Length: 371
Image 1 (cartoon, helix red, strand yellow):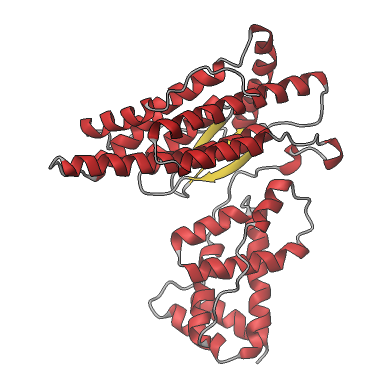
Image 2 (image 1 turned 30 degrees about the vertical axis):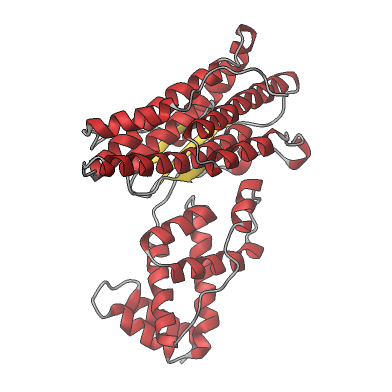
């Protein structure tokens, strides 16, 4: 029997049959034929390539595998993506390459052949059933010959946010975050002015940022607030656990940096607030945490927007309006049909008050220009 025939039989048993013994049957066939390993890996690379054609990107695939399966499957799919990359003949932008660089370097442990085959087939089942996503066309990324040197300001922003996450003082953490947002706003304005003076082929792009349970609704609201303050728009895909952020390249990176940092800070503040509540003899619940994060997102969003507005003078309004229109048009092309949803589970008054108080500590306000 050929190795291709073995893999075909295993796939018919395990991938296209949902019976209780389907996986075991397919895994037994593969475990009994070591010569089928090469063909099995080749088919896996084909599944990965199909995912790219259906709009997925490396980070998206790793995220959904981590969400639905186990660490061994994450390591398996990372190895498949790395193996398929040299044969990927489509032009890819810097964000795609950064996602490849961020993959784990270790292969999944094989163990016994049967267990390994079960894990591979479980992974292929998931890859086979991935739905089509909106294609984030990397043509929006300018040709490398057209790219301007990246500003060092993003490095300064990273440093500020790292300090904010590391400090044990809420006032200091939120003040550092406010400084980071001010730098982001100034950087965005500088980019807009440069683009107006030196027109290039750059158009709004898009990226996907994971919005993971628990409390994913509140987290999506926080991401939307950060995006709005940085001239971007978001569309949340609740079933697949991510939001698509649309905007210009420098703004997208700023949004990802600030959202990740604020999420860390919000979680720290929430843990501290819960400890204080327990010390007072009050039991806190999931509703408390949901309400806390919702209030935090709402209040921080208001303050970030206020900081961003301080960087905009009247003569800049036409430039920013033009870029905002381009972002809106790009969003509408990607998502011609969207719906709104109401934030659920925000009913704990103490949670809302504590979340708002944590956000108030941010003291997000206009500050003198940094040197």
